[in-house]
Length: 265
Length: 265
Image 1 (tube, chains in turn yellow, blue):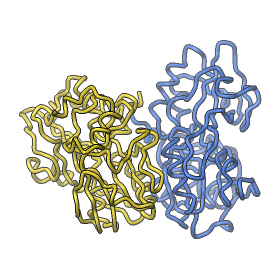
Image 2 (cartoon, chains in turn blue, orange):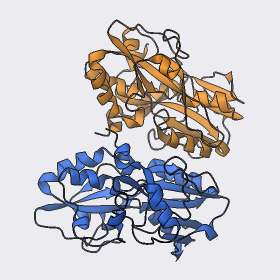
Image 3 (cartoon, chains in turn orange, blue):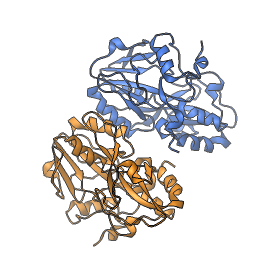
Image 4 (spheres, chains in turn red, green):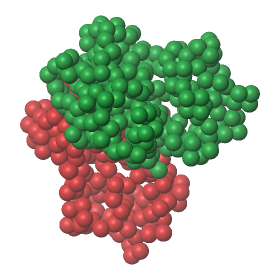
């Protein structure tokens, strides 16, 4: 089976397939039209700092759901879920270092952990496509290119770090439409943070993303940058909390709501 | 001096006048076009619960700024401010009961207090007026009518309570425009939560608001309801944290940004 075979499955059914260990690959293309989320799990002691960090940096860190301390269910957006098993691949972090990439983190779970589910730009990509705007990384069957920028997030408590952005090349004439299209979705990064001129935000070589894959930028296209849910992982690397779990890039948590539920209008 | 005499003053100058004790009255009309905010102050121990409560109920509780624990400066939206002195009148709560309404809460301040500043619907009223939509409570020189509804907020930790809404009567033909106008401002309550039929949200007598003043509803006008920043005060009354401070209704904290800075488009 490939991801697109699960296109019309319900989020609960696909979470079950993932929970059973049957699916360990990236999730784009599964449950078309439903929200896919980034995850970051921190000890309760760090959770307040993260909440403030997210409030001060809502563009890269739009919180969609929060588990009870020690609990594993995303009750509001995925009733019946188990956030320790329902993501195909995780990353486990100790003191800011990546130490494991398992497909189930139940054995790592502790009573003081809180999971935050964050909006992901996959949610607005269908709106862009419906508006006739090409999504290059989908056309080229790659992961979206992501870059660590020189834009510093506003710090909060012990958390700080640079903003990570995702990039999509957009034909110059369609840039305004792409801005308006995505501005409707503030819960999933919203409008771009930067249009054109990669160097102005510290990106030296657009062909070498820090995460994901490089994509073709055609003549007449402008690189457009959106806040990215990998930003918390950059904050982990910079701020080194003793313990954290995140999703592995591209391996998202699929939630029950539809992307369109997150549009403000 | 009356509020409108301070219409063109800068937020920092008006905060100074308030800090000196010279101004202890409501703030609508001061610093036209600048954001006015609700405030709720809680011990750090309760602050996490409040952050989650606000995340789950963003319409009535849109957080704009958060002080450092024990700090008194709203660094992002009001550099140089002192949240314990820069509001004309406060409310002090013990175990969910209102115990004092002073004009300065410095003597109540403790090292573990965190202040949350929340968006207020005053910010979108200028947008409504610019769109030619009447604001009855301003025309009648009263406070906006507010009602405790039967809509329960999503609980978070130890915090729960009903949603409080503000009401503006809008000519039926202008309701769509009022919805679109305010939908641009999700950081200050956004689009209405309910249009018409007060009984459906538990309001038995529209002429008897729970907070603020009653206003005239003319023939052909529909009562339109927006999420209200007094909701946290209702949660305090219901959830009884040992200690809290809020602004007194209508006596807001004036912040540096302009209302238009909070529009998403």
